[in-house]
Image (cartoon, rainbow, N blue to C red; front, side, top):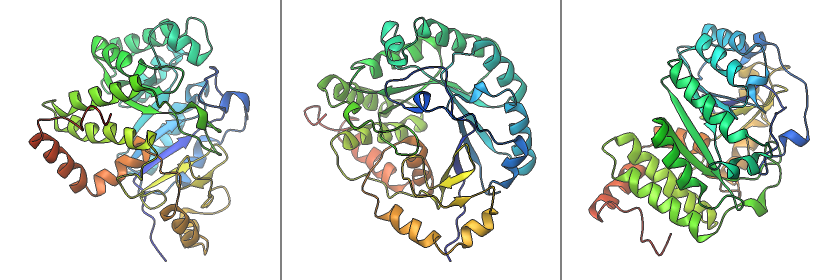
Amino acid sequence: MRHLRPRDAIIAVNHRCNTFCAMCDIWSKPDRHELPPDFYRRLPKSLKNINVSGGEPFMRDDLPEIIAVLRDHLDNPRFVFSTNGMLTDKIVKQAVEMSPVAIRVSVDGVGEVHDKIRNVKGCFERVTGTVRKLKEAGIKDLGIACTGSKDNPGALADVKRLAVELGVDYVCSVVHSSELYFGDQGDMVPRDARTRRDLYDISREQLRSTRPKDWFRAYYTDGILDYIDGKPRREPCTAAVHHIHVDHHGVVFPCNILNRPLGDLKELSWEEIEAAAGTEDVLRDVSQCKIQCWMSCTVAPGMKRNPLPPIQWVAKRWLAGATPRSRSAA
């Protein structure tokens, strides 16, 4: 039996949303089923980094109770909330109550570009207002997350500049498909020259930063270009072993992409899931996965476990003049 000791998890605490994003189907298939806070004591005690997601997680009124349960159950975990930022007052109130937590607000363009992606008029002004109020409230670990798609060319760089103006962190990604989460978004993957140039420029800027953390982000950002081009991922996937996804029904998956359940935490303990005969089959499917996704939630655990490949990449790029790759390749 192979031991599963995940340190990272995405927890979808609900499956409903108050925006209507072009690159996600959750809003079109709402499900009001939500697990009570005490359920989350069933998560593996090895967890250290938990991304609290949904749907829109702040549509729940009892998030502070869930976090209190997890803090009691786990050993000093870090919580990162992924939010669309629409429920400003509620987000700020609960973030302060749950502090210290990290908040990542999704912004997929500046002004009307974001409103169009989210299909909500005035959305951009509301969510940037949320970022400002979170900052005023003293939330230190605060950032913006931008997802590139065929519908927002240029947004990755525009939102990066916005993050600098607001004085908050920044992370980017591109659209992925998922049977169990985002839906089929294959035709939304951006392959335009402007998105490629943005990724190149962002990676170069991160590589030239004085913060080592940004050098690793440069490696991740550059890897998005490989994903766009359909190349094999440069990091072996550690899903199921070091990372899990728990959906709003309590079913555990290796990640939020591969539709291959490990087990149901409502019916089985984590130890029973780990010992189940089918676990080895799931791990085999993970190792043979053809999706080749490149998302920070599954890439970061592998980088933490084996930092040598990104360190070698950074060193090679520094010797080449601190450029991620030739601009023509981008």
